[in-house]
Image (cartoon, rainbow, N blue to C red; front, side):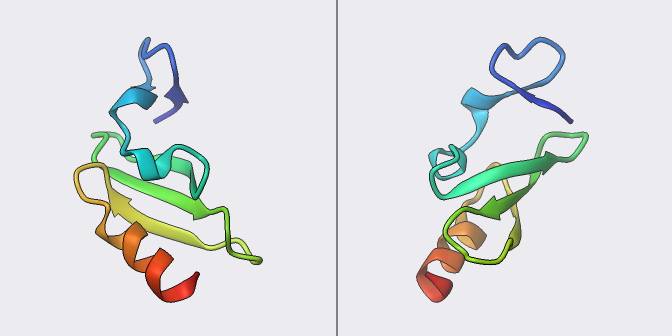
Length: 68
């Protein structure tokens, strides 16, 4: 699913958790139902993709604590 600020036929960026705003993680894909998200860590020297959910930020927070 595409990410768009307008929300017209695409996933509305306002529904994403703040940690996925692009400062720490950049969203690379969202599944069709809009619940699962793949995001790239912006702080890792090598591109690292983290799988997570829109409803839970645990995977992203754990990555930040352990890796960075």
